[in-house]
Length: 312
Image (tube, rainbow, N blue to C red; front, top):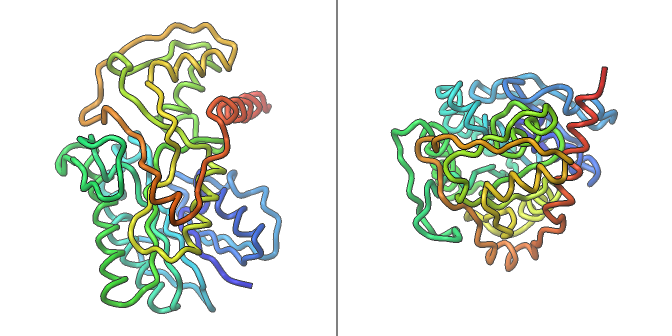
C-alpha cells in the first residue's frame, strides 16, 4: 500500500485528492494548518488509511515511516486570501516548497508541485502553452502569489536536477466545484453566493475578460495521471472552453433561476485579460481530456452550496 502525503489536504482541491488517492488504495496523510482549509472538507472521510496532521509546512516537517508520494498543495489560492496573508503566501511557496522537497529527498519520494496559471501573469500569448514564460508584475499586489509559485517551480526543478528527485509540476487553471468557500473571492463562489443571497452580481470592468473553468473531478484525474507519468517539466491542466466573465455571470444567474442585476466595478490591479490553457502537452503526455461540461459542473456546484446554505 503506497503512502501519499498531501499538503493542503483539507483545502478545496486537496480534499478531493485525498478521496481519490484513498479510492486508489493509498494510505493518505493529509497535512494542513487550516488557514484556508477546513476540517469540514475531510470530516466525512472515515477510513483507517487516512491520517490528518495539523501542521504549517513552512516549518520543519516530520513524518514517521515511509512516504512514496508527496503532493504539495498547501497555499492560499484566491486573491482575497493571498492579499490578506501576503507573507504567509510567500513563505509557503518558498519555505514550504523547500521543506517538502527536503522530505522527498529524505524519503526518496516522488514529488508533485501544485503550480498555477498565475505564473503566466497577464499573458501576451493566448492560449498559454507551457513554453510561455509569462508577463508577471513581481512587485504588484498579486506578485506575492505569482512569484511564490514561480519560485516554487524553480526550486522543484533544481531539486530534480541537483538531487535527482522524481518531480512533477502541474499548472492549474481556474478550477471550481463543491467545497470551495463561498467567501474566498474567486469568481465562481462569488457569483453563486450573490445569486443565492439575491444580491447583484459584481463584474469587474466591462466583463469582456475571459476565463476557462475546469470542474474539480477533471483536474483531479489529470493530477493523478501526471503523478504516474514520466514528465518532469510543467504541464497545464484545465479546460479549453473559454467564456467571458460577463457571459459566465449570465450562465450562473440562469442556472440558479435568478434575475438579480449585474453591476460593474473597476478591474483589480494586474487582473489578466485572458486565461486559457493550451492542453496539447496534457493530451500527448497524459491522454487528458476534461469530461464535465460547464453547465453540468456549475449546476452541481450551485446545488452543493444551496444545500449547505439550507442546513440549520
